[in-house]
Amino acid sequence: MTKYIFVAGGVMSGVGKGVAVSSIGRILKSKGFKVSAIKIDPYINVDAGTMNPVEHGEVFVTKDGTECDQDLGNYERFLDDDLTTENYMTTGRVYEAVIRRERNLEYGGRCVEVVPHIPDEVISRIKNLAKKTKADFILIEIGGTVGEYQNLLFLEAARMMRLKEPKDVIFILVSYLPVPRMIGEMKTKPTQHAVRNLNSSGIQPDIIIARSEVPLDLPRKRKISIFCNVQEEDVISAPDIESIYEIPLNFEKDNLGKIILKKFGLRSKKKNLNDWRRLVKVIKTAKKKVQIGIVGKYFETGDFTLADSYISVIEAVKHASWFHKVVPELTWLSSEVYEQHPAKLRELRNFAGIIVPGGFGSRGVEGKIKAIEYCRKNKIPYLGLCFGLQLAVVEFARNVCKMKDAHTTEIVKHCKYPVIDVMPEQKALLQEKRYGATMRLGEYPCLIKKGTQAYLSYLKSKWGKQNKKGDIFIQERHRHRYELNNEFRKDLEAKGLVMSGVNPDRDLVEIIELPRHPFFIASQFHPEFKSRPLNPHPLFREFIRTAISVRH
Ligand code: GLN
Image (cartoon, rainbow, N blue to C red):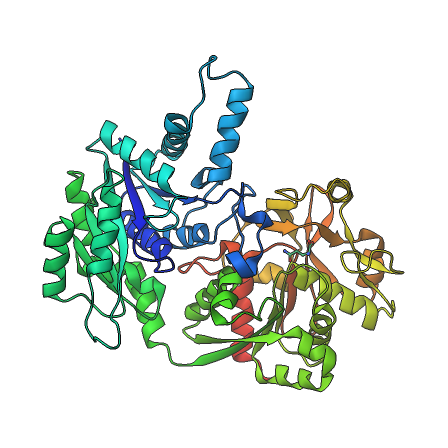
């Protein structure tokens, strides 16, 4: 029988609920259980694909092509598992399904009401995931904070589930305990209010995870216990720490795994967190630094948003760096500056490697192209991700193949050399203004040519399957509308651009590289989505390997 753990947030948002859920998942997995997780986002959007990354953070893409919240990325990284569309729920998705069913007369002529039909749909989606994954535990993260209107129906669904299956459902509240500077003391009152708020939805938390700047002391633990009606041992101290990957170990200091199992009357099936411990040891002890520059445009609203927009790229760089026992130092470089002040390009020399990540639209594009040219000519290790491939092709066409004005038709619709062009099926979608979930999304195959640098990267990391000819067959995740235009493939190849990976079904270029360069590889797919802390992505791994070993 699957057990269900609902996780809600109290006091305020942004305290790390997603990472808490991921960490609980990792702990339970380390005790020998099969775990899956659902993120519930209370907004109306059917998925995260149409949202601006500056406002919402990165749009993560699952292998089956769902554009979702970045928390699913954390779940995948901590659980080391590929998730699918069933792991994601929004108010929009739930209502869409109920309305569709009503239109199909599936409610047998009854009046379809918000309660119980909406919570019923929520519950059936949770159950559906349990059935599909056969997981021992399903973790359900209820987005938002208790006390707001938007997530009430999800809390109602949680309450109904507990009522029906009291032995199979528990609730965890991730709360925040401020330490106001003028008082200098940790305050529990906001958490008490959050619990009362939750109580008014008919829910009593079984466990409280107490997020704060500092660890919880005993008097505070006691206070929360008495005022919030939970056992003292069920209050888990969760102070700020440097690396999110340390959180499972921190939770385990307060025996969170054991406490959860006890609540369900279960026992650990042995296993342990040793591999995770080894990782955290490297994170905490590695000294040597590697300087990586990320050239892009979503950078103008401060550090917080910045890191959120590219979280999977950042994490993939970290995983790869830790593999080589170095610490990455990331610098955000605004490409627009290079358009106005080309002399500034010289700063790229200060970095061991440069990344141009995914992106959309015209702002800063010429600056990115200039940065790529600088990396190519000065042999600075370069990794291009999606837009980073497309612009590398534009740069090569313009400056090596002498196709002046070469461009991607995303930026200049009618250019002389459209070396990157919209895919035919995408053209129709754009004309009809059908933007939601219509990009080329999710996993597609790619065949990597034997002997190329990309090939060696995958081979070394033991990723993908080899065919009889020795080529490597991989699956990677996509999110784009434009492609390398095959009309120009021969011209580009003639001048030395190597197409090292190609989609075998549609003959679409997936990876390009430059020989006689220490590392110049770009992919049409997003390798960052598949990188895991204990299994870094081959392209990032080899990029960092070159960055730390080559001088330019
Ligand atoms: N804007 C480009 C496209 O749609 C690249 C997308 C991306 O980088 N994810 O093809």
